[in-house]
Length: 171
Image (cartoon, rainbow, N blue to C red; front, top):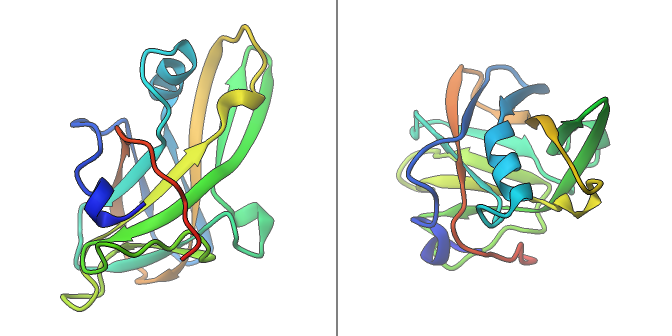
């Protein structure tokens, strides 16, 4: 996944939002409707992109490679009376000023910018729904990410569905 291949490959409408403030705090977003569409086959599961309202501030979030397991991104899906936790299958960040770079092996995922030097950064996440039992009735689905660094300010972050397939990469 790179900026050149995915910067415009997201749906026109956000499917959820989350807010982060302090370091080592998690944020959740209700994306039940999107997960229901993925499971029903109405929309392909290409994953999610996060876009912050304030792009002049950089924050860092734990990736699936982060050493503290309970701070890694996950999707909590409630089906009937059972809850299933899905770890991110793949995650990375794409950067405007590094339009051909891929950061899939990094343990941090940056969001926003540290100024003109870095450029816009958008995290990407994808979850494998194959672990969910079938047939299924999804009651709720919550995306959870943990802020582990960067500016200590409140940010509104929109969650968008990706509209194109991508690979995490090893950069």
